[in-house]
Length: 354
Ligand SMILES: Cc1ncc(C[n+]2csc(CCOP(=O)(O)OP(=O)(O)O)c2C)c(N)n1
Ligand code: SF4
Image (tube, rainbow, N blue to C red; front, side):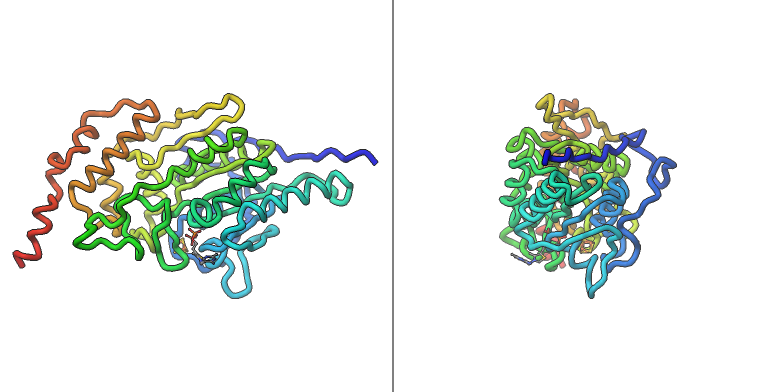
């Protein structure tokens, strides 16, 4: 019997992809594969992202959820908010499980055992799963080019276990595994693993991109591009965690914009055909990192020199994208110029003065 050809869904792009409509866009699909009713925190960035992602992918979708908040908080106590098939997998096997689902559908369709279009197969892995514990299985699935979309919903920490540092936690981030103290005043000393660029460098045939909940239309178009791409695709999406970052709950989308506007989360695409990075995405504003940091309790302990260090890092990212730096951002990379903030010495003197 000749093999039956696999029919793939080609999802259309939404217009105004860069800034997009903030609260309403008439082109948004009405479908809601991720419905109300789950135990995520108010303002949870990963669940906002989950809704956007599944809205973009539509009803012919299969979701895979390795252990983390987007498994546990969504499916606590024997119910789930998924209106499409969903399966839990172990935190380390995000990629191998997803690859198995994709390979099974390919085989079933070719043998005539499954009628209809190939489903959108999406894995939603936290950064603990994607950058640490499940990295090998995800890399394997991407390398073997299974037709699936693997998303790292990047809340920059292990959230579900009570906010521990992952290799995506930024320099200066306070977590229960990186508390600030006299020996390590900046809290986390290491800079984050450059995961998305690792994925592009290591799997050049994959569609790889970064996105943020601050730019919903861009995010949804990248989901669709990743799904339309025949073979493996990988998206890393900034998703602030209200509990771990310690911010006012309505500000999740604001943080999603600020993190890009201050250069700490570059938005780009890796084009596998041209084998090039596309750095053409431009936020509306460029801001100093302090505007982003000051909204979050996890950075509340930082001194001027640490903020300057983060500014230097952000400036390097702007340079990497070929964007000229305004004078104010160059100045902000020098701790002496952060006049409105306490210097390390001044801050250290406070307890003695009391
Ligand atoms: C092999 C294994 N190690 C550790 C755990 C404990 N664990 C459960 S949820 C979780 C945190 C996952 O973090 P992440 O993938 O970043 O997702 P988030 O909770 O942030 O959504 C951990 C470590 C586990 N379930 N399995
Ligand atoms: S702890 Fe963070 S990631 Fe988990 S449900 Fe709450 S806001 Fe979402």
